[in-house]
Length: 355
Image 1: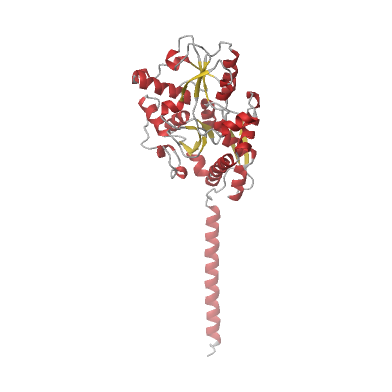
Image 2: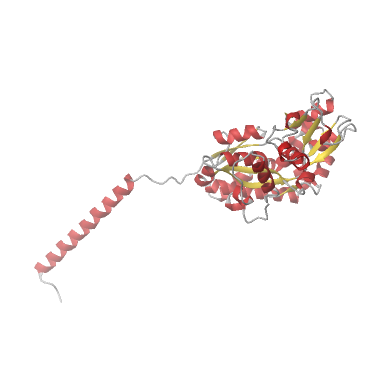
C-alpha cells in the first residue's frame, strides 16, 4: 500500500537525518584515527655486520656476503630494499663495542666474549645469541723447544691470543689451570698472553723474531704454522672441553630483534642457507675461504683438505657453550649463571640439540 504524501516526506526526512548522523560519526572517527600516533611497522633497510677475525670459523659470513643471501631472504620476506654493509673488523672487544655503539647490528665472535656481553647487558641492551656458526678445535702451537706443554711456559715466553682474558684461548687456558692447579690458580697463564690477530701472529711465530713464542690459533692458520717443522702443537681446545665446541656464533641486541623481526629472521635463514652451501659444496667454500686469506700462503688443495676435516663443523646448534658460561661464573668473570644454554639464545634456535 502506498504511503500518504505526508508520511513519505517524514520518512525521507528521518532517513536523511540518520545518514547525516552516521556520516558525521564516521568523519569524527576518521579524524581521531588520523590524529592518533601510528605504530611504526617499518624495519631498517641497512644493516652492518663485521666479517670477524678471519679464518674458517667465519666462513658462513663470507658465503652470506658473496651470494647476497641476506638480501635474498629479506626480499622473500617483503623487504626488497635492504642493504648489507660488511665491515672489516675483528677481535672480540672491538666487535662488542661496535654492537653496543650501534656501529654493528650483528657480530660474530667466540662464546666467551659473547657470554661476557650477555652478562653485562642483561639490564640494558640485552644481547643474546642468534645461533652458532661453527665448531672446531683451536691449537696452541709453539716454536720454542722447551715448550712441550702449557706448564713449561716461563716468564720470558709470550703466547698470542686474539684477546687477553676473554677470548676462547684465554678461557681454555684458565680452565686448564683450574683443573690442574685449583680454582684459585685459574688465571695462572693470563700474564703470559698478548693480544694479536691471527695473521700477524702467524708471521710473528714463523719469523722467529722473538715477539711471541706460541700462538693459540684456529684453522687454517694452524695448518699454515704446522707446515714449518720447527712448530709443534702442545694443546687443543677440544682436549680441555671434552669434545666438539662452538668456535664462532652470531649475536645481536634484543631491541634489534624486536624492532626488526623480518630482518632478524632473514639473517638467521641466510645463515642456515650459507651452512647448506658449505656442506654441499666444499670446493666452492674452500675457494671463498682461500680468497679471504690469500696472504696466508695456503694452496687450494690445503684448504679443500681443511674443509673435509671431520673436526671442522658448521652448525647453528650451540655446543658446550653452557660449559663456558658455568666456568666463567665460577671464576667471577660473569655475575649471572645461566641455568641452561637456552638462557643465552633467542627462541628461534632453541629447538636445536644445543648444549
